[in-house]
Every structure is written in structure tokens, then in C-alpha cells.
Amino acid sequence: MVSVLGEEPYINIYSDLIRKGSEIDSLGIRKSEVESDEFRVREFLEKYLPKELAEAIFKYARKDLGCKTGFSLKAYINWKEKRT
Image (cartoon, rainbow, N blue to C red; front, side):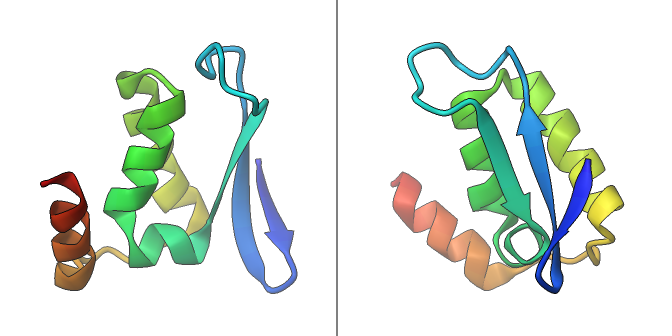
């Protein structure tokens, strides 16, 4: 489901597959988050969902939110620094 919060579209994800032990029952991502830091958004989804499901949700979220295709070198560097 794509909703609009204020001026910005976002997606709420409700699933029984959200990892057990987490205190949340849904996940939400905004269009600006997906466009500006796709690595963090992918990592966030994979933290709570099985990897295959997280990848599919990310792929369709980009399409449904109308995100522009592109690669952010700054976002990649920030993501890489956090992982090392």
C-alpha cells in the first residue's frame, strides 16, 4: 500500500514474516529514504524480513513510489564505512 504522509509518499509493510523477537509489527519507508540511501533501506528491510522478501519489497517499493534510478556514491561510502 502506498500512502501519502504530508507531501511525501511512503509504504507501510505489515507481515507475519517480520522477525520474531522484534518489538515492531510493521515497517515503513519513505520515498526520500529510498532515493537518498538505498543501502540503508535495504539493510533495514533485511534486518526484519527474510532476505528474498526484503529484496522483492525494495524492488517494488522503488517502482511504486516512483523513485528515480540512480546511484549515490555518498550513500555507498557511508554504508561501506558502517560495515567495516
